Every structure is written in C-alpha cells, then in structure tokens.
Image (tube, rainbow, N blue to C red; front, side, top):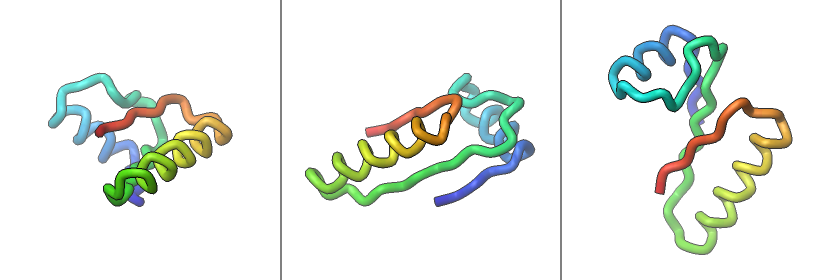
Length: 63
C-alpha cells in the first residue's frame, strides 16, 4: 500500500494527464494485489467493498 499526499496527487495527475483523481483530495490510497487468479478476484472485491464502506469518493481499478 502507498498513501500519496496532495502534492503527489498533483504530480501524478499531471504526468498521467487523466481525471482519475480529484485535485482537492487529501490522500490517495493505492492497493496493489498479487495476481493469483481466483484469490486476486476475491481480494479485489474485498478491497473495493472496504473502500465503499469507508466512503471513498472514487474507486478506480486496473486489470
């Protein structure tokens, strides 16, 4: 896991040039999961559920 502060969010947003994160966010939580087929799917679903329970403003996922 990695937590990025507002300055890091701005840098990443500028480098990637996307709108995937809000510039007024205080932090971004990145969760990296191992790629083991069934286990990875379960872990991903659990991670998304935890983020939603904790009222994350946005959830983005890559495959």
